Amino acid sequence: MSEETSTLNPSIVVLKTGEKLITILQEVFEGEGDERKGVCLMMNYPYELSLIEVPNEDDPEKDLQVKYSKWCPYSLESSYRIPYDCVLTIGTPDPGLTKAYMTKVDVVKSAETPETQPVSGSDDSPDGQQQQQLDEEAIEAAGTPPAIDPEVV
Image 1 (tube, rainbow, N blue to C red):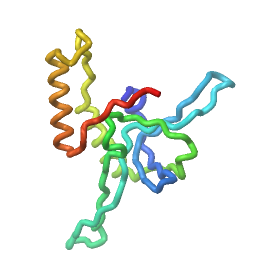
Image 2 (cartoon, one colour):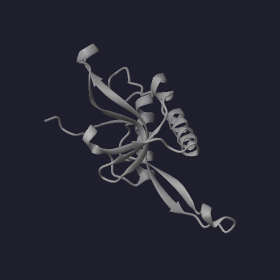
Image 3 (cartoon, helix red, strand yellow):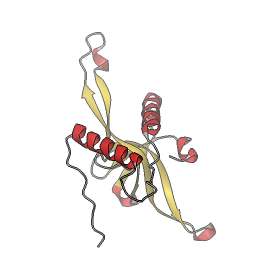
């Protein structure tokens, strides 16, 4: 995430699909000056929000908690472009929710490491082998099949 993105406040985005997300939202523009026009929205670190019931005998009114789920869990990406017409509404999150989300984003950002390219252009380098092993462990832990490289049509 760029320095500019890290200073932005998160937004609650409700998509037409009904998904409720918390994300750092930006608008993508094309052109400059009077010719500048919005193209789409950029969602940075989107997480789907849901409420879960948690029994609380001390205060029954506080028996709900917010659950964060990575919006697109099968992708390594942290930013997604979406067309304007996919969004139903945009709002401002509660201050407590904002603080919890930004803490989560900071944890994710600290776990991200820049990808290193092997000098030889293959995965035979120690860094490439280590990354491949980490990828395989993550896939195994997630219980999902390995990604398939799509063909360019």
